[in-house]
Length: 276
Length: 295
Image (spheres, each protein chain N blue to C red):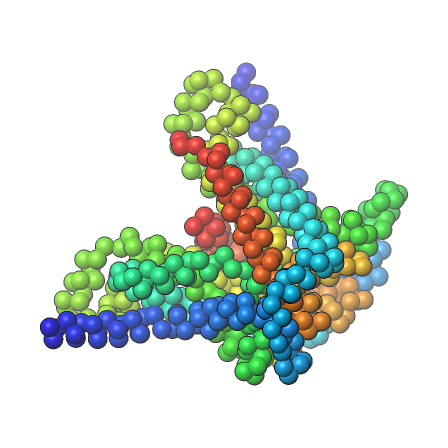
């Protein structure tokens, strides 16, 4: 008897959650669905399936938002920034853990404390300083800024992890004649792999989707990242809905592909990052 | 003695090699702008003027007398309050159902998480079309007046639209954190409760929820701090329209600084906002911590 009741309850839960999931993802479905229609068809009935599959909207959007250039810019900026963040912050965290000086304790406290400062509290002086130095509108400055903004969190995560690594291996390496840099890159860095993955995922998502910082720094159209070119595409062609939908689908594709391939790591990384 | 000196020199060298890349970027991008920003608020600096002078605390006084900012700040408070409550309620319910051993649980979880991979700008644009075209289309079919005009053209409903999208966006994220919380509850505690006769709702409220206080703290913290700082979604979905009724605090600061060119006044608002967020988040953590129990 109880078994039957449980089974019905479970069925109700399953049906409920599936309906919810469909509603939840309906915006994405409608976006894809309408990206194949003309604007008139879209306005008449957004739910109807397209009469024929045409990629005209995609070609339009691809050209008008200079999709490849945006994609390339985003990719270059993201890759170099994330690489620099991981190398520099892991080195710093290693030094802070292994040398218990008073200075290091203060520095670590400053890193951690800085995490609560929101970007909005820094953006005005940031633009003002780098504008005066004539350093705006430069991809490399943006990368440098990501490197700076990425430090605190990455140092914090690496610091926690390195503390748990026993000293013996490093001591053995030092006795064998490795200097500190070699010891770090050959012995310590490979051990950090699980935390590197977490930081990689969080920083990739952050930099890939970031709009506000690049909108303040990259001012010329040729330097735009993907979120910036999406924004300018939308503000300049706001009447022609159908190609806009295609543009959105295009910008989402890279993320969805990445999600399909490393769903588990992404979810784990994001949750780990939040819990710490 | 000589050895000690050499060790010291060695240490300084190592400090330089290991710390300087990180420290240099951190100081140039974060520390200097932060200090400079603080200094700016005591001046009347504007980027178009060549000179500026000290004005004491008048920028801060202006923040508290600026009716527009206070109005938009109140709106932000409301937005943060409702989006925090609803996104956490939905997330907790999803996590509760998706830890009860349904089939294809992982697939279902992943499906709710998707919006968190996509930036606020893109989510905002998707929903702009949902509100402007899809919802109005449903309204016409049902011949139901309130749905026939776009949510985004009414001051009150436009802010409701912001809340709906925020709840939709974060529910899947918080759900994952709550799932981690559910999974982390020791089996024996649950079993002990069951032996003592706790079932269903009673078990949920007396045993599960008290043990999940740390998850609540994290989720509330994230939704409060992100809510106060919301900008991308605000920009893409409503752009502050209609008539500035959905211009949240972040957008106000952005426009004051970069469109009205009042850097110093904008920075004073940014610092006030930062302090408010810090106070609200810390208060939340302390209040919620009181409900924490040991298992």
